[in-house]
Length: 260
Image 1 (cartoon, rainbow, N blue to C red):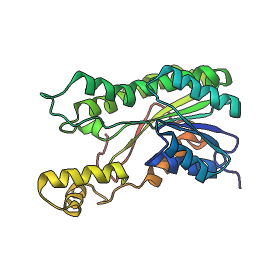
Image 2: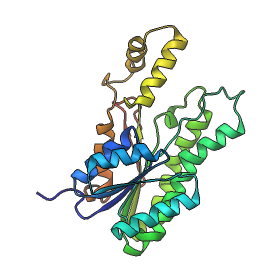
Image 3: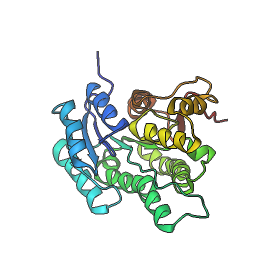
Image 4: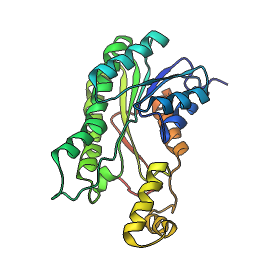
């Protein structure tokens, strides 16, 4: 049986924790060679090491043009092509009411959550995808970018803008045979989400389990996504199975936000 990513090369940013290592493992299992990058080099090297020789790791700060260029050059040197880019790197920033918001917090969040996706996309397009006339770029937004979220003007603005960036890239590169889509997770049960839940529960004077039940009470499936759920959708969008899907923002959130 042919593997779904046989012969393809993927770059995954933000690959040290959360969904990144899970996507790396799944992509290699499906035949891809993967470059996994993150700022915390020890963690991303550990994640790639657990996957095996078809996954390599390197440090990359996706807000740095020099780092991103070095990341893409490494993928080209190691594998000779780039077929898939998963713009997974993100940061939540510091929660602040808008009347407390600082330019530093706002712009630092946009740099990681929005500008970096443009920068990484630009580099893989120029290095490989445009010349070869093929490729799939997947950006990672959040349902908070649909609904808004208190104390997160910085984060929600970036995640909403990612959907517009996705559409524009799709329009520009579509005639060249390249696709760009946006994967929009809701809550994902990662360490980051659990830590956020404990903090919110503490502020509300309830237990974490009570907070979690309350958080999921409005979700139709009464469920929270696991990293593998996000990875499975990323696999579909990266593979040729989605060859006529581009410019789309597709939710993975147990029905928490229904578009349309």
